[in-house]
Amino acid sequence: MRLTARVPATSANLGPGFDCFGLALDLCNEVTVDTEAEPGISWEGEGAEELPIDGSDMVSRAMRWVAEREGQRIGPFHLHGVNRIPLERGLGSSAAAAVAGVAIARTWLRLPDWADREVLFRAAADIERHPDNAAAAAYGGLTVVADRSVRRFDVPPSIRPVALIPEHLRISTEEARRVLPSEVPLSDAVYNVAHGALAISALTTGDLDLLRRALRDRLHQDVRLSLVAELREVFERMASSGIPVCVSGAGPSLLAFETDGDPIPDPGDHWRTLRLATRPTGVEVLSLPD
Ligand code: HSE
Image (tube, rainbow, N blue to C red; front, side):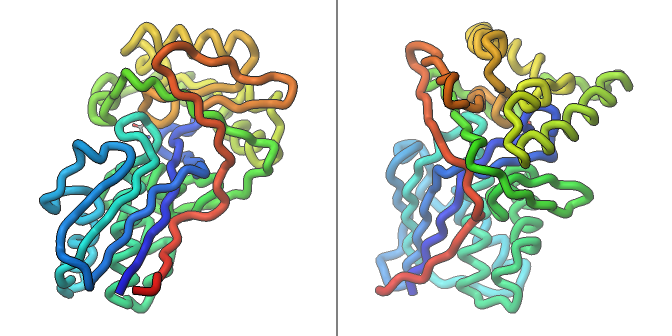
């Protein structure tokens, strides 16, 4: 049996939607599990040199987690990952791996609800601990997580995300969460509720003028932009020229939105600019001929 999971990159938070908004991006990893091939693990693409091959990677862990929960055993297999999502850049590589592992294991074990996205999302969120990324990777489109449930929204093609990725900077989510305050003023919470509602409206209607204002946040972005002076400098340059921009997930990448007459300038040396469509579909599992 050969199963391939295709799973998208995701950008969490989208400014004010800290820990609850997610957007699926058309940049996918592919993970193939082959039960007939020589057992082992191999990677190509992003992080291929550094990802573990001893079974401690997130895809394998998620597969084992599902099997253990179901009281089943998964036999030997070869796992090959084609990675296009950069690691530790705020583009959901770890949630993508968890979602792929859960989707493959559930398909392999032919669980009765193997294609149920809510079950898949909850398992991946329990394993990886970032439900906002896991929701968008499982459902595609724009997602909002509330009370462990997901609401998915379509996003029109006029929403054209551009990931600005500092190749020379990496920040783990743990590190980027350690700097956050444990309490915030009520006025900041109110500010984020209002801007979060505007952001959902702007992203679902394609209103880029509204999006420019709606992406503002008072809970996490400022402190994260303080981690690296260059990050704040690029962010402020984009924002002051009227480009809708936010920190992608926990950073250090930024997510900007392009309009026809207003191309996003190159942020500078060592930055990669990826012009991506949004991805309407979440994880897919394909069964390939042997
Ligand atoms: N919402 C999480 C955070 C995203 O900002 O820490 C993790 O990718």
